[in-house]
Image (cartoon, rainbow over all chains, first blue to last red; front, side, top):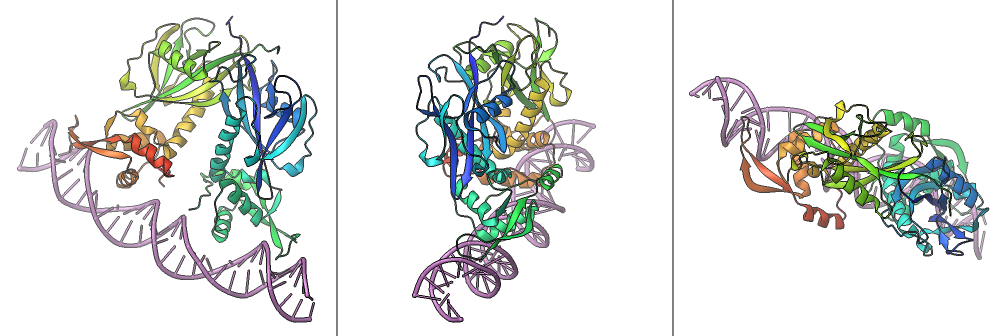
Length: 230
Length: 230
DNA sequence: TCTATTTGTGTAAAATCAACACAAAGTAAG
DNA sequence: CTTACTTTGTGTTGATTTTACACAAATAGA
């Protein structure tokens, strides 16, 4: 048998979006050397547990949430001392959720669970800052070539919501007319016949929804989602 | 201490290209249950060894090569029984090399090391077929938005070499003139003043080389490499 | 010297992208 | 109820980019 004494963990970078702000979920440690400090949700995997299940379990346990989108981000195992107790290799996951769908609750070994605006995240434990950085890059680039923005919004949304999400996350101005034209040209966003009055003043807007079946169908026909503007 | 009994390995999908054919490197097992069958180069990591070093070490040991390009592809740990001896999680790496630069030699625990055309790879052990499939997708998509094709070619190459590489890997026809125009417009490929006579008949062509410093500089200025044709 | 092969080059039509302004429908305040 | 303010909804034009396409130059081999 191989002499190897390394532990495996999973961690998740969970993004949420609300009213022009991008958030990341962090957990405050209750126990251990890093007690009270903030880290990403995650933990050790069980012996017979698939990686993906481990992430979902930890998110449930530590924050009480189930995400809309989940994919592997990368594995952190080059820094042999990233955990100073013993060697831990961590598989990081990238996740998206609509914060409105859940009330955060820190159950088991977490003291607290909280959404931090991406620019106001406290110094995180381990190498979790690096993970957030990488995940943030992934989010920005993926937003341009895959319709993942919808996983951050309500099922029905105003066009301005979608547009603001893109502006916020990509940190750039977008021409409102060109944006709408392009999104609609794909045919993967359909207009509902509901009209919603906004709290603030202004003309009420129609609600739209993402047509996922249509998107999947288009994918088979070699469709390429792509939102990029000057 | 955590009760966890899982081993960690690395595996590499190494692509090579030569004269219109894309190759993948495989290793024939000498020992164990899978003796004589083909697998990807790889193996268990050492207790104090960064992941990336483990890959490089295995490639050196098992095939005698050092690659031009290496990046993490993904971690395979959802199938708990992907290795039937005990649970092994494998971090797969994506690598590119110019086959001409090395003579394959299977040293240590490998019986043989060989290049297989991508369409003629024998059934591989473990879940290595899945890894190859994923790596192949990555290669195809990455080729369009990052100048990694050069890592498969000689330092100096004919324009037709580059063009054939793209045609071969992307499996599509490309207009010769438009391709050259676009590549040259980036300014990251420079013309040497060497002219080379081809073995076969035909007008001799100029040799070109990839200007990596220039590319890195352009990256800072928000340059986006992108080769896609109808 | 004639044929076959490969390199090297420009242009015109079509499609896409970028920039831009004003009317319609509502709210809030006086 | 009128006015000011806010937000939604919509088309066109010029600039840029992409596509499609053909022929001359240089060599090898017969």
